[in-house]
Length: 397
Ligand SMILES: Nc1ncnc2c1ncn2[C@@H]1O[C@H](COP(=O)(O)OP(=O)(O)OP(=O)(O)O)[C@@H](O)[C@H]1O
Ligand SMILES: [Mg+2]
Image 1 (cartoon, rainbow, N blue to C red):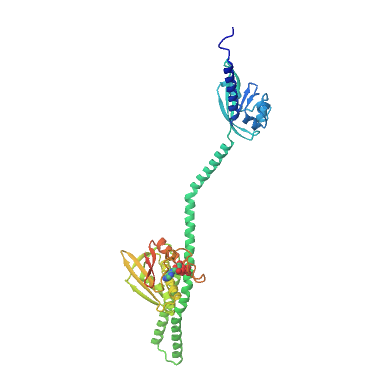
Image 2 (image 1 turned 30 degrees about the horizontal axis):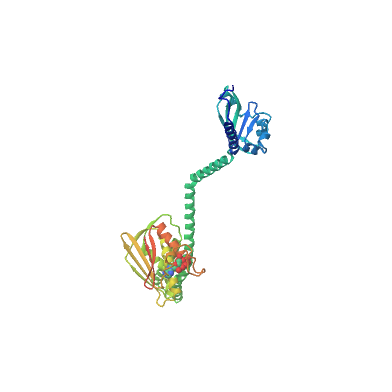
């Protein structure tokens, strides 16, 4: 009589077949490469993903030596895990670069035991990690790049700031050259009168000498007069030369004196154009900073006032300057009656290269430079507003 326990009912048989099919489907559905090899390293079973990687059908691989198919070699590679799995009886994992399959694989090899506990085969599950490794390498490279950027960031910022400073200095220098052009024409006018005087004195001397009418006292007097005039001319040259020298360190200066000196450069030409200048000042306001650059900022503001007055053909053109002191600070305001600044452009006038003038007369750097000098170099403020009939600039240092 057959053993009741070993008989399998048709229903159970059906179930078993179903389970086997299901397992086979699962085996084939997995995207990892799965294959089972016997102790002679011959394929016993191969899933669809593995077969596809090898470019054939699963049944075509069965019975072939795995190393021939996978590595294209006549024997197993040195790092093959098979011997180790057999020896230790435990799963082992390692990474392989498999050129023939065109990628990097993470392989876990596990032993399969028979009922006696002997290992009869090994199951290999290989995962293609080529993309993962590529991303990791990319990430590592980016990380390294980032670290390098971080390491050099500080020095590069310092370099960039120094570069900007240099550019600013060049701009200041350029704008100073523009002011210089303006001043040279004034110097020529300033010198005409004293030079004429010297000429007259010398002519008179000559006449007096020829007519034997020259006393030692008269000669001394005339020479003293000539020396005085020459001294004035020489001072203009000094002012002029000082204005173009570069100031490395801040120093104390009297705002009133500086404004007067600046005016001496531009006043004659403004007067010739019918512009009146009013100066209202508290005496001797002392501040610390860079006098030449202050003068440059002040002159830029003055020249803008002149341009506005001439541009609008104002009937009684006037520039009023006030110098006062407040809480240890100096305030110089320059006000004109040239029609003021359009409200919509008022916020832009200090921007570099902002100008409403024809390109032959303005590049739009004057106020930008002035602001930089007053605010960045001297930690003061330079502001503008419209007042009755004109614009007012306020320089506070
Ligand atoms: N006093 C003022 N009245 C009216 N508008 C002014 C006055 N001062 C400045 N502006 C306006 O501000 C603009 C910018 O002045 P800024 O001095 O920066 O440049 P610019 O005078 O046009 O050219 P640059 O000074 O470089 O020769 C001027 O073009 C003008 O429109
Ligand atoms: Mg200007």
